[in-house]
Figure 1 (cartoon, rainbow, N blue to C red):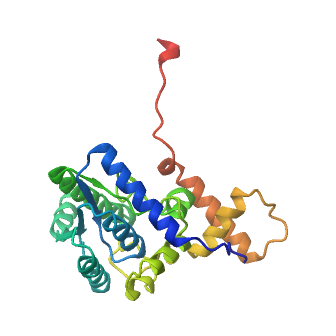
Figure 2 (cartoon, one colour):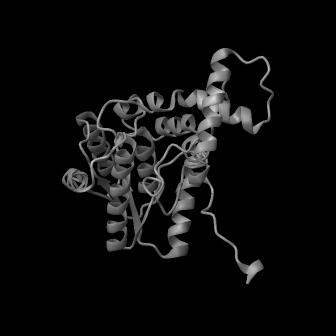
Length: 266
């Protein structure tokens, strides 16, 4: 499978995103930024870009039955940021008791509710981020990338998708890794398999999606460029099918909320 081999100018892209964030803060009068730290590559890159603005950055750890290795990576990244950027602060809010109380109050599900509960974790975190954003006059900074947000819709609606700005949503996952190398993100984060950490186990994003990010990026580019499907290998055809299925199923996340227009019938 052939992938995009164009090398991104990481320095220019970094400067552009940092400038974009700074300009937005100045234009809106927002005092600073709050971001959830998961121990993954996206939140590590975005929080570092936020820190480079010199504006106040609050990093929140919000574990919910989290795997220790994910928690440790997140804490190590926050230590990395604090050593380099005096404008970075952090808080840990253990949401495990909140989640457990919620689970104890809802009726017993008659069908598999694992995905619904996983999305609930993400929405509890969104609520927490906006609590602190409102408390301090900050904005919530999103960590979604292009393949997740606009390719396969691999995010929780009104969860990690509930943000004020999305600084890396025009970058593919592979490009996020390029930025991570340039920003010298700690090796344990750069080397860890991507996972959303919402199920309380060690399943990776690839386990859930059925394809790797490089494969899905190939499929997204293939569709965007309008290539014909003749001559694909069995795996390419399979990946393309996965991409198209997820893209179609998750359009409700990617498109604006439908509004019923009534002017014509008034």
